[in-house]
Image 1 (cartoon, rainbow, N blue to C red):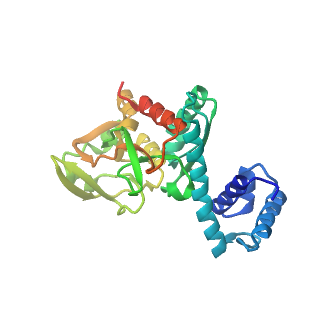
Image 2: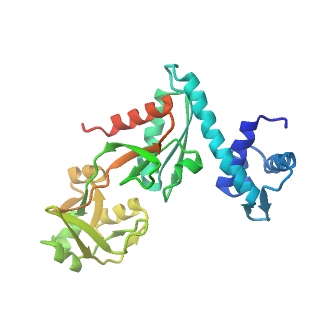
Image 3: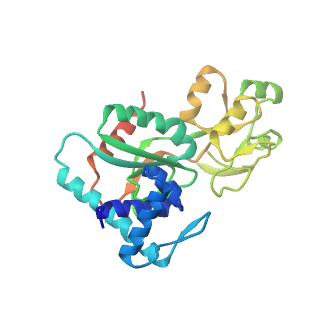
Length: 298
């Protein structure tokens, strides 16, 4: 085959991740016909069909599943080998794949990546934002930024920010509807629900004086996007639960007020997580240290 093995492995892993040739071609800056030809050459070289293709979708054959499994592992080992050989270099460089949640990744992490890129111009950062956590090992992701506990025993984590979550509302809402005096009062208030993962809809689980309590709330507005829910709270539509890091500027400016401060949600601290059992690259260490510095208390 004319191209090196690593490039073919990268190509097929991208194809498997995106599920179609067009998306993989765009990421590799190839034309769709060139990507189709490249897949055909790979299948011809191996003597098996790797992908079942229709006009709209693609799916891996059993042989394709086996190939992408080994390809992902080989690429990770190649990166580890290169890093081990070049670890004495003082300037971080090379490809760093980062994953973050959709809203937080777009509004907070993306601007920090921009600053990081200015400081470390020889590091190529690929930032993927997703609405659900991904399998870092299978996807070949170097590190992810996540709130809450580790979802996978194969991962290790470094906490970069403590994160409590409070009840809040706009002054306009509180002037019209009054402030709740206790947990039971929330039942008569309009509450804005941020739907996350598999949480029971409209059930808020809180901590009060070390005890776990829950309350069923109701309201006319809910969203799976936290920024949308925050905008509704700022517009005076109801009471919302929001992280302290996101609340500070609005509380300081008077646009939001904390209500029932003795009730908080269980802490969901911010972590950088990464696969264990492998040598961490200089670029990954630099990025983690950079994030930790940005989120350090003033």
